[in-house]
Image (cartoon, rainbow, N blue to C red; front, side, top):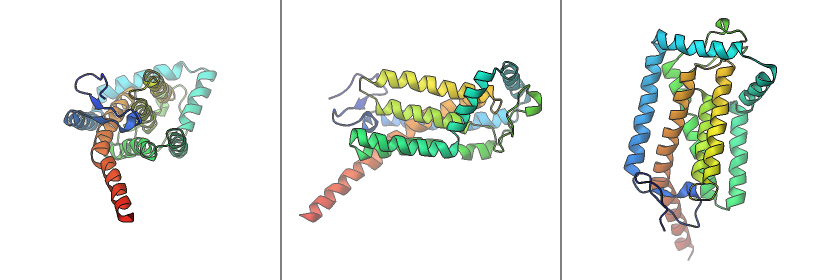
Length: 246
């Protein structure tokens, strides 16, 4: 059975499989999009790190947010920033993976979810190191976040994690009645995290935009390759084991 996905993103749908395991038919298009978008993010980062005018415009947005601080918003954004810091984010991913396994009874779906989040999130740190864009100047902000995070600014690891998590849930819900809800909550969640890091003054707006693009591109290419090359081999491996036992 095939779903009614738009041309260019058609998927082979097996009713008994979670959406995250559905195979995109036009795989070359998905891979090309993902690869091109990742290259754009990296190149854009190098351009930003050497372009004063854009950084100055970015900083003006951070300043505006900093001047608009309110206690309740500061408390909320601090909580958001803390909850999805690296260590808690790993725990969150592990817990969600376990829940997905328990709910779907499908280990492949649960592992795919975890791989999608981790493999799209962790490499963004390599881009941070390569681009090495400095964080917004805390002395220019009315209410700076202290201490200033020591790692480079571009892209935002917090936003990459949130967006990759959202994409993983969207793929998981693909082809089900929960797809629309997953998309809505994913967009809202990623937006909240993106606005939070700008509000706190720990990232520039362009860091956030690049992080969102990175997550969409990375999860798309990773899932396409994973379902094309890795998942089929798990079935063949199990079949070989069953044959050997006979």
